[in-house]
Length: 79
Image (cartoon, rainbow, N blue to C red; front, side, top):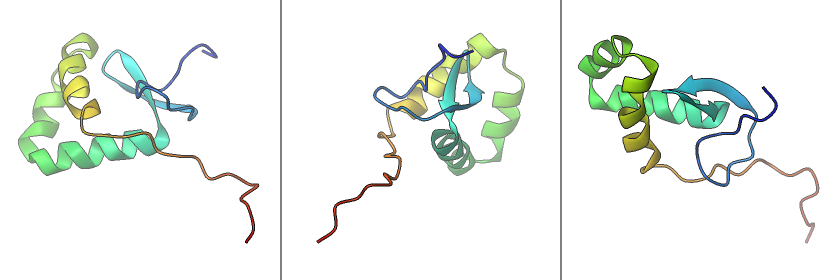
């Protein structure tokens, strides 16, 4: 499982949940849920009835709307 990465290119977050047949970090997972919620309640019913491979186009559509979520760094420069 150590070779799994977030499906969002450039994201280095730890894997949290599947998104279709791929995986996302916790921050992107929450973003995915929010995006699906905004699509309406029918999106949750539709998505729940899909197989992992059938979910890929939905996850791909969502992934076009997000950007990399930067992890907070412990050594921020002080001014």
